[in-house]
Length: 464
Image (cartoon, rainbow, N blue to C red; front, side, top):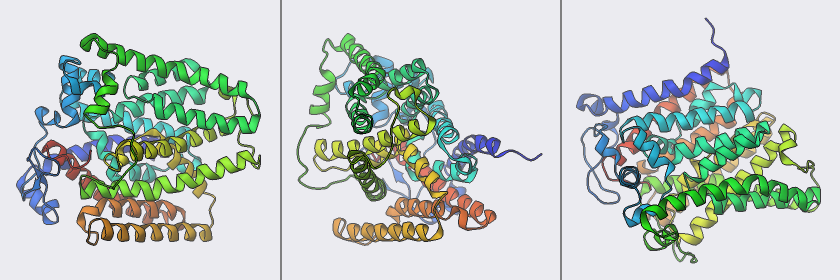
């Protein structure tokens, strides 16, 4: 029986999850490890410090207690003990409660990944053009990206992705109750008021320039603002019940995580693997998005483009809503970058996670894939040239910043550039060649994700 493209795409997350767990389990056995990844790289082992050390031994087995490392320990303690210790107040309560429902067990791996991947498929189906939303190799490529390993660990990214996708579903359907619920849940998962709210204000400024109606902006803020405020207030109140203070979240961010306003004096990072992902996020995501944001603002200011016409955004057309989400996502990426630069003192720690492990990044990616369907070969050559130039910039950067040439620790960057190249040339090669290339890159991505996942289990967390 011939399966439809929609069915194939639905199967992709489940098959990939089974392969990930199967391959990882196999790599805990000496023979399979020596025959495969052990030929090329040695995994990180326990060291109780950032970076850790490597050793020519198989992966650690997936055991429940090994999931309680790094931020996973905070989520575990919040779920089991509440906000009974100071550092916990940096985190919001919804994910710890979900973690608790799984018995603080390895089931959270399955739950997190499915929350992410099925939400991503929904975004594909609703926002992608026909050739994009029906492409299972594209879905596979995006799931196999190195950054996706974050959705296998007991962090809040998967739940946040799902909750905000619920909000997007309500937005696209014109259902304000679903939008409210999704945004409320997202605001109890992570502190989103600052960057998300400012991103919404940025979109509304563009709408004012187009519609010349402040009332339209006020209508939108009434739609978006209450669930974010209520979700944040609820989270702060839960912390208050255990701590007796409404301000612990802010003081912990300042005292423990050192998230205070300051101009960056130098660029720093924890690891080579993390640095490769962070610099990719800057070169291939932040810089193009900055250009896009500047272009949108100039066009809106000069009224050169009819981006928005509807005063009540929930009553807008599907195309106008997609434009709204695209500009919102672009503003979020820029806002996240600015926050990291101004509140981490030049430390790039976590940049790729804050940018690439969100629905905002994938909305921009889908918008880009939609545009690619209309590009001719000449335009694609220009994109490939830009890819090559940015890759050269990365090599120069590593030479200057790390005082060496790129090596195997920058494998994530190579994988992501190869993935971008294949997505650009997707329609210019026979179908069978594209499928084979996608499968090859996905296998490499899967093995690399297991490598990063093992570093978390080993308590040698190399990518914050």
